[in-house]
Image (tube, one colour):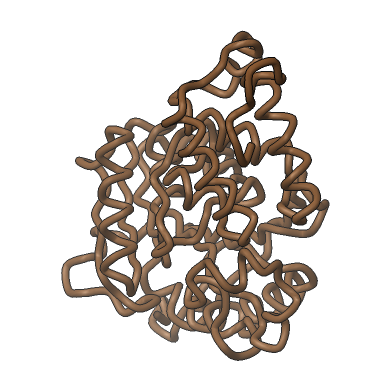
Length: 311
């Protein structure tokens, strides 16, 4: 692909470009080389991925080939493909992503599934949802798309991340039901909590321990926002905050749905159930790596001597 083929040489068709890019990515250890090649080639040509396979013999113009060349070099330098194309699919929806937000991952869809299942089984058709550390906003937006009566409040400490989330809410038609706040953990501004508290608290917090950051893939460790990956401690500080302060923002039977890292499910359960403020109601494994990925707990605050909630 470095030069245009001379007369009599094989033309750079879409099929040939796809094959060459896939092989190039495999040699440069780009994750999912075939998928990455398809996504970038489709983006360069302004096509849907499926259209590549109906146009294998088409020869793109020089401008499209030049765009692909630039994308390929960036991906080979371990820039995430989602940042190159500026978007990522999550729960069958399309979200804008920039280097200011974590790239949505299939494992995180389990938070959405658990929240929706809870609403179905309890008949909760108009829940109030709180998302801590929303990033791109993909999790609460996906829930709102599937629950027309739901409302959500989503926080992040990054104003740039909140700007991305705001655009994604508008893109997916839920901006009128999503409130975005710049806040750290559960330090919510006055008036942010609905009467009676939130029914569901969700979070995919920065849970990678600082001493494990070096084990992450280079495209994650060096390219995605560090503040969304690690607490620069043991990976559990965000969970401690929610365990301590969560009951004070949750409804009487409110639940917490949290993504956790590999090997963290039991330590997180222990943090929440210590002292009787929460009861563990389940842990779900993801379908990608089979790890215990999402922990679910229900608020169970002790009562004080008057029968009032101790919170």
